Image (tube, rainbow, N blue to C red; front, side, top):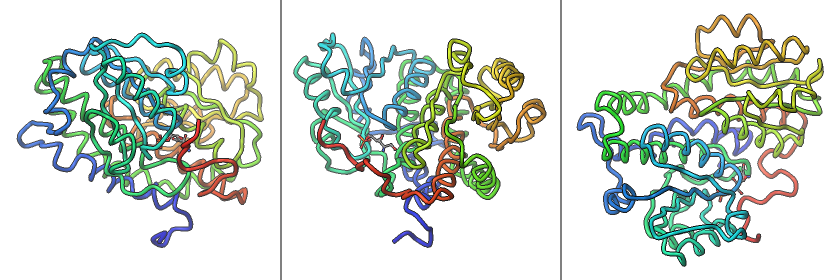
Length: 366
Ligand code: M6R
């Protein structure tokens, strides 16, 4: 069942090249310079005329929503708000008929997300679902949607569900950007081209497995870990920290790198590992100066860098290289080493990776 892997989580991490391909198959038509998604085509006007998009989700799916906020605003120029479903449903939110709600859920059964959908529907909003499980409650309760096609995800720690959610949301944003004319034809084409290359890039990142395992071995006894990223990769930092907490029980925090000096910098000493997403596109110079600040306080740096990087390599204690891609697609690659890092730490500590204590695969009670 585990296809030769020790754990479902590892199998699912390795399935990502295929899962991402399955997600864009039939939707990304590069030769025709088209993105075709039935749920979008059928509701194009509603989506294009939306005053704003409200994204609701929980946990890892909420992190995918945060990535989508950057993509939708950047490419499609539609204002986006991302909310924890549990907070949204109970705070008497302002929702109108001109709002579009996107609910993201792997299982399609998360109680708070389902309740947020019902609330938005009762106020007349158009509700779009991004689910993995076909025929799930959320898939049925929404007006339209797009499946992620990741295949079954058994490990409690979500991996391929996340990258395929980001893939679907990227396709949606590109489709809307094209319809709105907020992206040039050449930029649109470039995104299609680069998106098609993502599975082989992920394959490439997966080859760093034993290198990542040795980093995991160095830091497995840490009590804390900080994850930093900026822009598109700030949500990736949050996701990296969540993965580590869930399966290794090591306390971890994700932060926007620039927020470090507003508090968490006080935590940094020679015992603190700090994972920094420092790939070339997107505020690279600023991240480099964040790294220098950490170094001068003796923090241990594990940096995710673009292949061939030399600047960060000279500063960091460890680097993990990922292939170059477009900034909007970089979360799809930068997430992979963070999944492997938490996986290896948890395994080295002898934890139950696939079924961590206190956690359920889908949270059907609030
Ligand atoms: O099935 P859903 O995507 O709605 O689940 C949401 C969260 O419960 C889920 O992502 C949770 O945070 C995972 N354990 C993360 O690895």
